[in-house]
Length: 147
Image 1 (cartoon, rainbow, N blue to C red):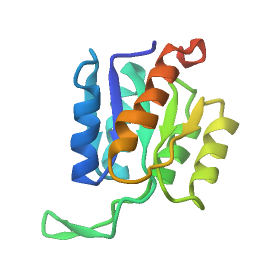
Image 2 (image 1 turned 135 degrees about the vertical axis):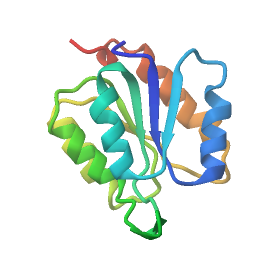
Image 3 (image 1 turned 180 degrees about the horizontal axis):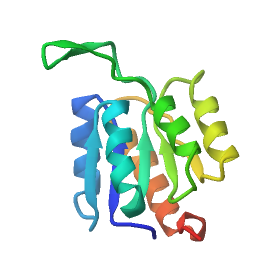
């Protein structure tokens, strides 16, 4: 593996809590960020020690931050930023936005990143089921290790 942290881009507090619960037994630092600009800034400093990146696409509308309007961006912003860098770890996209996800996967895979999608469904059960299974498989795969 290339690092010790799992980084998740997610703006929904219920999903955030479910991700934390699902990964609680794992020996990784977990970093969850709710907007693309902050995630890009964090990855700029921490990409070399990141083991897995998980991206949602839709991050909600603009919001107030420090008394001014702030645009949270999207998971595609992070995917584009990653694509301009050497592949370091796998990326798991967990978005229900069926129109946006193929472009995210294409830009990542075209740049040499291992990328996969999990489709959210139902309540939050998909996190303990299909998402956690994909995380486990990606972290065990020899392709997840940087060369």
